[in-house]
Amino acid sequence: MPHRIEATWRRIETWLAVNAPKIHEELRPPASAALIEQTEAALDARLPGEVRALYRLHDGQARHGLGLLGGWTWLDLATVVSEWKIWKGLLDSGTFGANDGGDPGPGVQGN
Image (cartoon, rainbow, N blue to C red; front, side):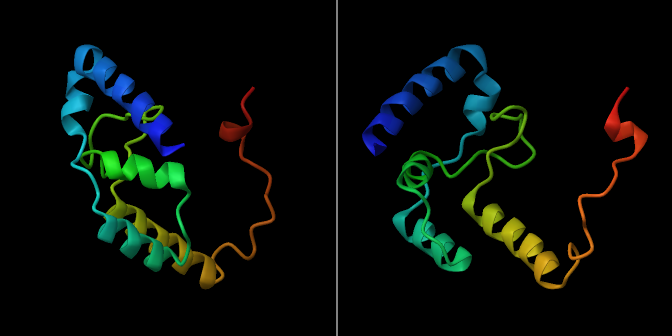
């Protein structure tokens, strides 16, 4: 599967270079095997092979860049770990314990 990921990603990069050069320029260099392993250790989880393959091509994109993925920035692995620690800390502290799904306010419910 990683070979298919690489081939598909090369097609995406070619398209980006022509149609969205700013986003193409924001792609970071590849993540090292050591960085991927450090990330997995910090998350206490093994990343799926396809995700590992993507990060071996690029360690995400520049922070605060244009959104590559549906308007969202592709996070580099250091930021993935940082964000995970924040959200995990909130979960472990019980911040979400009283969240019953709630009744969204009128702005969320729409018309």
